[in-house]
Length: 263
Ligand SMILES: Nc1ncnc2c1ncn2[C@@H]1O[C@H](COP(=O)(O)OP(=O)(O)OP(=O)(O)O)[C@@H](O)[C@H]1O
Image (tube, rainbow, N blue to C red; front, side, top):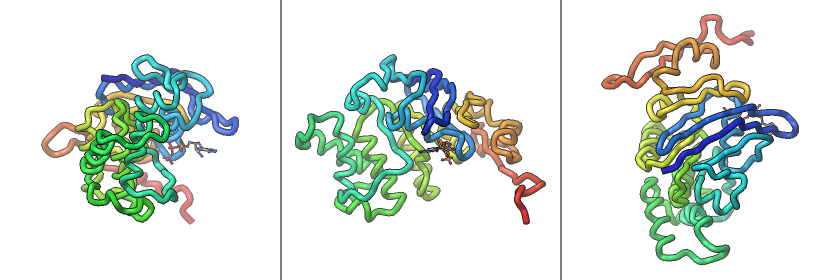
């Protein structure tokens, strides 16, 4: 089992600090959600975890191994990602896209082994898109693409999974299905999520980002208070529980003063 730790992470883009001093721990097998308003730095933080953006300061470790000091291949054996946007202009099939998940386990240009083929086929089936294996990736719907990319992440067989808005493009049933699949995989997960109710249902711990800093963290039950929602998101909230269990459920209410830019 595998623990992901971010320590004092600072990230700048074009000289502008975007993330400042973030500490975050995703203990073995825990599902950690990163929530916060638009532009608070969620994607930027996650990109550093899967090595798409370098750190200005701090460290990101997987079981004590600094992912930025490993070879890209070794780092990709430890951390798989479902990014928010993926180039879809490559002329590849869904199967070939998912098979890219095997790259860190192979020598450059080595052909797929029977084991690779079985893993990729299994990952596509597991993500519910086995029937799309021969379709051009670029021709798939947003939700179908998302699930093929999840299959790619599964095929990578990394113990840490980073998900940036994984439920984007998905209908309500597939939102639950995708998060159920990820939960069942038992990997250590860090996920940026906009939907606070999905975050409350699927995450063991939440980190709230605002202006590139962690302003609160803890289990959803302790963290998601009306005060926090009002302060961080500028929205009123009534906090209740899901029928049948004690998972917090938020009813979000527009502020009485309405939008600030009303004509
Ligand atoms: N390549 C870039 N160049 C300049 N600024 C950037 C770049 N990428 C991100 N930013 C800025 O960094 C800040 C954080 O962006 P980021 O995408 O990490 O936020 P987020 O919390 O994921 O937002 P959202 O909820 O809208 O997806 C924003 O102000 C954004 O404009």
